[in-house]
Length: 348
Image (tube, rainbow, N blue to C red; front, side):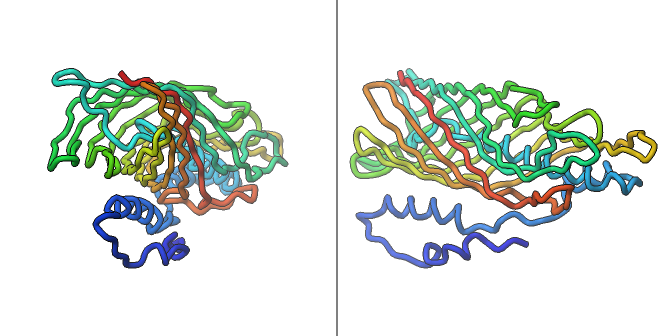
């Protein structure tokens, strides 16, 4: 079992007291420590280990190549999940939209790019002597989100409003994987969800919002499908829950948050080795994938009239469960990943 990330930040995780005039800092502190003081991923067999076992079967010669493919499908699943969740439903936006007037929802369109950086075994080369090196790739995508404010929320006392405010979210995006001979190129992802306000930003208080979004995308392949080598294929879906708190310091607004993601989907791995006589022995494993992951993020927005330029960056450890396998190269599971989004927003 990996050591909890909290061990590195024990001073942050201790007890504290705040005065009432710093109440919004309490929300900020809880956001950061909730994401840091959590156990890291636990190594276990899980779904990816089952794919590896099915791929090897009764052919020990396939073990290392199947391990390469299993580690790649695990890393690919996590990396694509980071790309799909980059920026959340509405990046660097700590308050729900609300309504322009009674019965008339406020609407926002968010267009921009997203990226994710993650480590993986490089299974793009084929041949009996090829080894899967330890690589870190940067993948990019595009996304368009539409958000509508359905309910303004309740005003508890004067100056404290937006409680249980509700937005609905829909999005479409292009998702891709690192380049390889058998890479599937870009695929379209789509999804939707809700944003629920806990507190609308005011002169003295920050905005606080939680959101839940579901997204999925078409099949994405990585590796080589010819000769001795490995191939990994995923059809990912992601359920993402986020907590964000932030405050405008006109014209710039700052925000931080923590989230929990559940990656699901279908996975398939293939491995091939050459026999002594020049023939090819092949193994295949297919099944469901599942991974849980926690992350932290921070963002900023610049407002000009009804438009905003936003940027958000996130950090996450590999999720759990992780399979602890040894392939042909030095790659080992259990690293960290980064993601982010840069968008232009128009609100009506």
